[in-house]
Image (tube, rainbow, N blue to C red):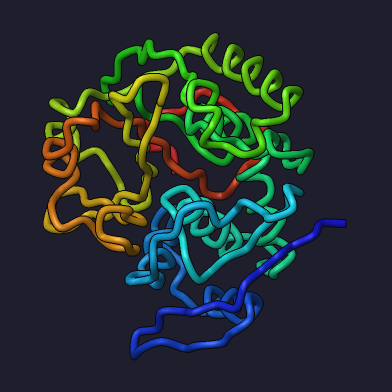
Length: 288
Protein backbone atom coordinates (compact mmCIF):
# COMPACT_ATOMS: atom_id res chain seq x y z
CA UNK A 1 0.00 0.00 0.00
CA UNK A 2 1.30 3.44 -0.87
CA UNK A 3 1.88 5.92 1.90
CA UNK A 4 0.93 9.40 0.77
CA UNK A 5 1.96 12.24 3.01
CA UNK A 6 0.14 15.42 2.09
CA UNK A 7 -0.15 18.96 3.29
CA UNK A 8 -3.05 21.31 3.76
CA UNK A 9 -3.35 22.98 0.40
CA UNK A 10 -3.65 26.54 -0.78
CA UNK A 11 -5.28 26.58 -4.21
CA UNK A 12 -5.12 29.53 -6.54
CA UNK A 13 -8.57 30.29 -7.93
CA UNK A 14 -9.62 32.79 -10.52
CA UNK A 15 -11.19 35.00 -7.87
CA UNK A 16 -8.70 34.52 -5.05
CA UNK A 17 -7.32 31.96 -2.61
CA UNK A 18 -9.08 29.10 -0.90
CA UNK A 19 -7.28 28.30 2.35
CA UNK A 20 -7.31 25.09 4.35
CA UNK A 21 -8.37 22.66 1.65
CA UNK A 22 -7.24 19.04 1.84
CA UNK A 23 -5.18 17.54 -0.93
CA UNK A 24 -8.24 15.64 -2.12
CA UNK A 25 -10.22 18.89 -2.34
CA UNK A 26 -7.46 20.57 -4.30
CA UNK A 27 -7.28 17.60 -6.62
CA UNK A 28 -11.04 17.81 -7.19
CA UNK A 29 -10.53 21.30 -8.62
CA UNK A 30 -8.46 19.84 -11.46
CA UNK A 31 -11.36 17.68 -12.59
CA UNK A 32 -13.25 20.88 -13.35
CA UNK A 33 -10.62 22.64 -15.44
CA UNK A 34 -11.00 22.69 -19.19
CA UNK A 35 -9.15 19.73 -20.67
CA UNK A 36 -6.81 20.67 -23.46
CA UNK A 37 -6.31 18.71 -26.65
CA UNK A 38 -3.09 17.32 -25.20
CA UNK A 39 -1.67 16.53 -21.78
CA UNK A 40 0.73 19.44 -22.35
CA UNK A 41 -2.06 21.94 -22.97
CA UNK A 42 -3.85 20.70 -19.84
CA UNK A 43 -0.61 21.03 -17.85
CA UNK A 44 -0.47 24.72 -18.77
CA UNK A 45 -4.06 25.27 -17.61
CA UNK A 46 -3.44 23.46 -14.33
CA UNK A 47 0.02 24.93 -13.76
CA UNK A 48 -1.30 28.47 -14.01
CA UNK A 49 -3.66 27.70 -11.15
CA UNK A 50 -0.60 27.64 -8.91
CA UNK A 51 0.71 31.06 -9.95
CA UNK A 52 2.01 33.00 -6.97
CA UNK A 53 2.52 30.06 -4.63
CA UNK A 54 5.91 30.06 -2.90
CA UNK A 55 9.12 28.45 -4.05
CA UNK A 56 10.45 26.20 -1.27
CA UNK A 57 13.34 23.80 -1.68
CA UNK A 58 13.65 20.43 0.04
CA UNK A 59 9.95 19.64 0.50
CA UNK A 60 10.54 15.96 -0.29
CA UNK A 61 13.10 15.44 2.45
CA UNK A 62 11.78 13.76 5.61
CA UNK A 63 13.02 14.35 9.15
CA UNK A 64 13.39 10.62 9.80
CA UNK A 65 15.15 9.79 6.56
CA UNK A 66 12.34 7.50 5.37
CA UNK A 67 11.40 8.01 1.72
CA UNK A 68 7.67 8.54 1.20
CA UNK A 69 5.44 9.79 -1.56
CA UNK A 70 4.79 13.43 -0.70
CA UNK A 71 1.89 15.38 -2.17
CA UNK A 72 2.30 19.10 -1.59
CA UNK A 73 0.01 21.60 -3.29
CA UNK A 74 1.17 24.47 -1.08
CA UNK A 75 4.78 25.09 -2.12
CA UNK A 76 7.10 23.91 -4.86
CA UNK A 77 10.60 23.80 -6.19
CA UNK A 78 11.06 23.59 -9.95
CA UNK A 79 11.06 19.78 -10.11
CA UNK A 80 8.14 19.17 -7.72
CA UNK A 81 6.14 21.75 -9.68
CA UNK A 82 6.76 19.89 -12.95
CA UNK A 83 6.09 16.48 -11.43
CA UNK A 84 2.89 17.54 -9.67
CA UNK A 85 1.44 19.42 -12.63
CA UNK A 86 2.34 16.64 -15.07
CA UNK A 87 0.66 14.03 -12.83
CA UNK A 88 -2.45 16.21 -12.48
CA UNK A 89 -2.64 16.75 -16.24
CA UNK A 90 -2.18 13.06 -16.96
CA UNK A 91 -4.93 12.21 -14.53
CA UNK A 92 -7.28 14.74 -16.13
CA UNK A 93 -6.90 12.73 -19.36
CA UNK A 94 -7.22 9.33 -17.67
CA UNK A 95 -10.20 7.01 -18.09
CA UNK A 96 -10.70 7.11 -14.31
CA UNK A 97 -9.46 10.53 -13.14
CA UNK A 98 -9.56 9.98 -9.36
CA UNK A 99 -7.15 10.86 -6.57
CA UNK A 100 -5.69 7.34 -6.48
CA UNK A 101 -4.85 7.64 -10.18
CA UNK A 102 -3.10 10.94 -9.48
CA UNK A 103 -0.94 9.59 -6.65
CA UNK A 104 -0.10 6.53 -8.74
CA UNK A 105 0.95 8.74 -11.63
CA UNK A 106 3.03 11.00 -9.37
CA UNK A 107 4.84 8.00 -7.90
CA UNK A 108 5.62 6.60 -11.35
CA UNK A 109 6.90 9.99 -12.52
CA UNK A 110 9.09 10.59 -9.47
CA UNK A 111 10.50 7.13 -8.65
CA UNK A 112 12.51 4.66 -10.64
CA UNK A 113 10.24 1.87 -11.93
CA UNK A 114 7.45 3.50 -9.93
CA UNK A 115 8.78 1.90 -6.74
CA UNK A 116 9.76 3.67 -3.52
CA UNK A 117 12.87 1.86 -2.36
CA UNK A 118 14.87 4.41 -0.46
CA UNK A 119 16.40 7.79 -1.14
CA UNK A 120 18.00 6.92 -4.46
CA UNK A 121 14.86 5.39 -5.94
CA UNK A 122 13.83 9.03 -6.31
CA UNK A 123 15.53 10.40 -9.41
CA UNK A 124 17.70 13.37 -8.46
CA UNK A 125 19.34 14.13 -11.82
CA UNK A 126 17.11 15.47 -14.57
CA UNK A 127 18.75 13.32 -17.25
CA UNK A 128 18.05 10.21 -15.15
CA UNK A 129 14.47 11.37 -14.54
CA UNK A 130 14.02 12.00 -18.26
CA UNK A 131 15.35 8.56 -19.22
CA UNK A 132 12.87 6.92 -16.87
CA UNK A 133 9.91 8.90 -18.16
CA UNK A 134 10.88 8.23 -21.77
CA UNK A 135 11.09 4.52 -21.02
CA UNK A 136 7.71 4.43 -19.26
CA UNK A 137 6.05 6.15 -22.21
CA UNK A 138 5.12 9.46 -20.60
CA UNK A 139 7.42 11.73 -22.56
CA UNK A 140 8.98 12.03 -26.00
CA UNK A 141 12.45 13.58 -26.23
CA UNK A 142 12.41 16.12 -29.07
CA UNK A 143 15.84 17.60 -28.45
CA UNK A 144 17.76 15.84 -31.23
CA UNK A 145 14.95 16.40 -33.74
CA UNK A 146 15.02 20.11 -32.96
CA UNK A 147 18.69 20.30 -33.85
CA UNK A 148 20.24 19.32 -30.55
CA UNK A 149 23.83 18.19 -30.22
CA UNK A 150 25.38 15.60 -27.86
CA UNK A 151 25.60 16.80 -24.27
CA UNK A 152 28.92 15.31 -23.27
CA UNK A 153 28.99 16.33 -19.64
CA UNK A 154 29.44 13.77 -16.85
CA UNK A 155 27.31 14.15 -13.74
CA UNK A 156 28.86 14.03 -10.30
CA UNK A 157 27.30 17.01 -8.54
CA UNK A 158 25.84 15.02 -5.65
CA UNK A 159 28.89 12.89 -5.01
CA UNK A 160 31.17 15.93 -5.41
CA UNK A 161 29.08 17.82 -2.84
CA UNK A 162 28.39 14.97 -0.47
CA UNK A 163 28.22 17.31 2.52
CA UNK A 164 25.07 18.99 1.11
CA UNK A 165 23.03 15.77 1.21
CA UNK A 166 22.52 14.38 4.71
CA UNK A 167 21.60 10.88 3.61
CA UNK A 168 24.88 10.52 1.74
CA UNK A 169 26.65 10.24 5.10
CA UNK A 170 25.73 6.57 4.84
CA UNK A 171 28.60 4.86 3.02
CA UNK A 172 26.36 2.27 1.35
CA UNK A 173 24.06 5.00 0.01
CA UNK A 174 27.05 6.97 -1.23
CA UNK A 175 28.45 3.93 -3.04
CA UNK A 176 25.05 3.33 -4.62
CA UNK A 177 24.99 6.95 -5.77
CA UNK A 178 28.42 6.81 -7.41
CA UNK A 179 27.40 3.62 -9.25
CA UNK A 180 24.23 5.36 -10.41
CA UNK A 181 26.21 8.37 -11.64
CA UNK A 182 28.44 6.05 -13.67
CA UNK A 183 25.36 4.48 -15.24
CA UNK A 184 23.91 7.90 -16.10
CA UNK A 185 27.22 8.93 -17.66
CA UNK A 186 27.12 5.99 -20.06
CA UNK A 187 23.96 7.36 -21.69
CA UNK A 188 23.95 9.65 -24.72
CA UNK A 189 21.73 12.70 -24.38
CA UNK A 190 21.31 15.86 -26.44
CA UNK A 191 20.85 19.54 -25.71
CA UNK A 192 20.14 22.67 -27.73
CA UNK A 193 22.72 25.43 -27.12
CA UNK A 194 21.01 28.59 -25.98
CA UNK A 195 22.19 30.59 -28.98
CA UNK A 196 19.92 28.38 -31.15
CA UNK A 197 16.79 28.51 -28.98
CA UNK A 198 15.19 31.63 -30.44
CA UNK A 199 15.26 30.19 -33.97
CA UNK A 200 13.27 27.13 -32.91
CA UNK A 201 10.78 28.68 -30.48
CA UNK A 202 8.11 28.40 -33.17
CA UNK A 203 8.34 24.60 -33.00
CA UNK A 204 7.64 24.45 -29.27
CA UNK A 205 4.12 23.78 -28.05
CA UNK A 206 2.16 24.68 -24.94
CA UNK A 207 3.13 22.24 -22.20
CA UNK A 208 6.42 21.10 -23.66
CA UNK A 209 8.77 20.35 -20.80
CA UNK A 210 12.07 22.24 -20.81
CA UNK A 211 15.12 21.28 -18.80
CA UNK A 212 17.72 24.05 -18.66
CA UNK A 213 21.23 22.67 -18.89
CA UNK A 214 23.89 24.01 -16.56
CA UNK A 215 27.50 25.12 -16.85
CA UNK A 216 28.13 24.07 -13.23
CA UNK A 217 30.65 21.28 -12.81
CA UNK A 218 28.99 17.87 -12.53
CA UNK A 219 25.41 19.15 -12.95
CA UNK A 220 23.32 18.29 -15.99
CA UNK A 221 20.21 20.43 -15.54
CA UNK A 222 19.72 23.28 -13.08
CA UNK A 223 16.10 24.25 -13.73
CA UNK A 224 12.92 23.10 -15.46
CA UNK A 225 9.42 24.21 -16.38
CA UNK A 226 6.71 24.17 -19.03
CA UNK A 227 6.49 26.13 -22.27
CA UNK A 228 3.64 28.64 -22.55
CA UNK A 229 3.17 30.36 -25.88
CA UNK A 230 2.29 34.05 -25.95
CA UNK A 231 2.17 36.23 -29.10
CA UNK A 232 4.25 33.78 -31.07
CA UNK A 233 7.00 33.44 -28.43
CA UNK A 234 7.75 30.71 -25.89
CA UNK A 235 7.75 31.61 -22.18
CA UNK A 236 8.58 29.47 -19.15
CA UNK A 237 5.96 28.50 -16.54
CA UNK A 238 8.03 27.48 -13.53
CA UNK A 239 8.70 27.64 -9.82
CA UNK A 240 11.35 30.35 -9.67
CA UNK A 241 13.99 30.38 -6.93
CA UNK A 242 15.05 33.87 -8.06
CA UNK A 243 11.60 35.39 -7.53
CA UNK A 244 10.47 32.93 -4.85
CA UNK A 245 7.20 31.88 -6.45
CA UNK A 246 5.47 30.03 -9.25
CA UNK A 247 5.36 32.38 -12.21
CA UNK A 248 5.42 32.86 -15.95
CA UNK A 249 8.78 34.21 -17.05
CA UNK A 250 8.77 37.94 -17.72
CA UNK A 251 10.75 37.49 -20.93
CA UNK A 252 10.69 34.83 -23.67
CA UNK A 253 12.64 31.63 -23.09
CA UNK A 254 15.60 32.55 -25.32
CA UNK A 255 16.01 35.88 -23.47
CA UNK A 256 15.63 34.13 -20.12
CA UNK A 257 18.49 31.80 -21.01
CA UNK A 258 20.71 34.55 -22.41
CA UNK A 259 20.68 36.62 -19.23
CA UNK A 260 22.00 33.80 -17.05
CA UNK A 261 25.60 32.74 -17.77
CA UNK A 262 25.12 29.42 -15.92
CA UNK A 263 22.42 28.37 -18.43
CA UNK A 264 23.98 26.62 -21.42
CA UNK A 265 20.89 25.46 -23.30
CA UNK A 266 17.77 23.30 -23.11
CA UNK A 267 16.47 19.75 -23.32
CA UNK A 268 12.91 19.50 -24.69
CA UNK A 269 10.42 16.72 -23.98
CA UNK A 270 6.76 16.53 -24.90
CA UNK A 271 4.11 14.75 -22.77
CA UNK A 272 2.32 11.98 -24.61
CA UNK A 273 -1.43 12.07 -25.14
CA UNK A 274 -2.82 9.67 -24.15
CA UNK A 275 -0.18 8.48 -21.73
CA UNK A 276 1.29 5.21 -22.95
CA UNK A 277 3.05 3.59 -19.96
CA UNK A 278 5.89 1.14 -20.51
CA UNK A 279 6.13 1.89 -24.24
CA UNK A 280 8.82 3.95 -25.91
CA UNK A 281 9.00 4.14 -29.68
CA UNK A 282 10.62 6.45 -32.20
CA UNK A 283 8.46 9.54 -32.63
CA UNK A 284 8.32 12.70 -34.70
CA UNK A 285 7.79 16.35 -33.89
CA UNK A 286 4.03 16.13 -34.36
CA UNK A 287 3.68 13.45 -31.65
CA UNK A 288 0.99 14.49 -29.18
